[in-house]
Length: 179
Ligand code: G3D
Ligand code: MG
Image 1 (cartoon, rainbow, N blue to C red):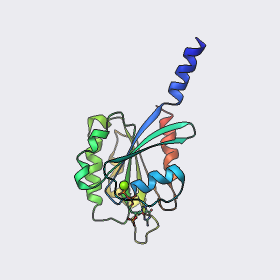
Image 2: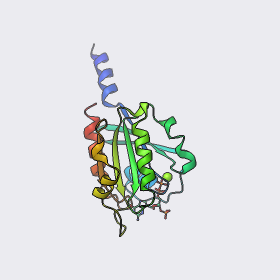
Image 3: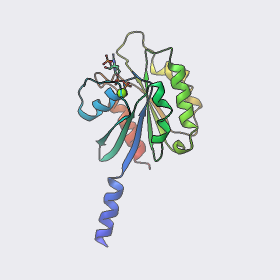
Image 4: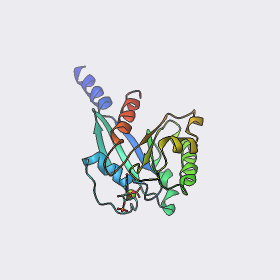
């Protein structure tokens, strides 16, 4: 009986929460993933295919898939969707022209059957750049307040310094605890 309990305990406590990191190419997805991993800036190259890493925050395990964002790869994002609990959408806050594409991709994901239960964390990245849009502006543009069927949270950040990333992870950790 004790053994069964221990096994169940370890199963639930170590259960991994699947996360997909999406966003347009150059948004900062890979930089964010590696900031999470080692708190230092690494040289990145455009992601072809995907990177996957495990991140542990306060005993909560996240398996994070960094999916390439180039246009040619976006159509294959849905092959990563099954069992996803969290979507991290990374937005380049200086890229006003392509925010409309991020918006389309966001609503396409939210409408996808396999992501019905997924919570969404939006990182408004590159806040160190002058003339960037604020998280509030991005939130308004993406009409986040209209999203009622998914949990969502927007967090401004700078992947180069790591500023804001912990707050985003904390939100995810608090959500993961409720599952
Ligand atoms: P991606 O994985 O979403 O395609 P990357 O994006 O992580 O490869 O980052 C794309 C470029 O943006 C990189 O620059 C990276 O250093 C830069 N970047 C990422 N986050 C930030 C940020 O918060 N602020 C600033 N100023 N730059 C950022 P390079 O020059 O290597 O292409
Ligand atoms: Mg990348």
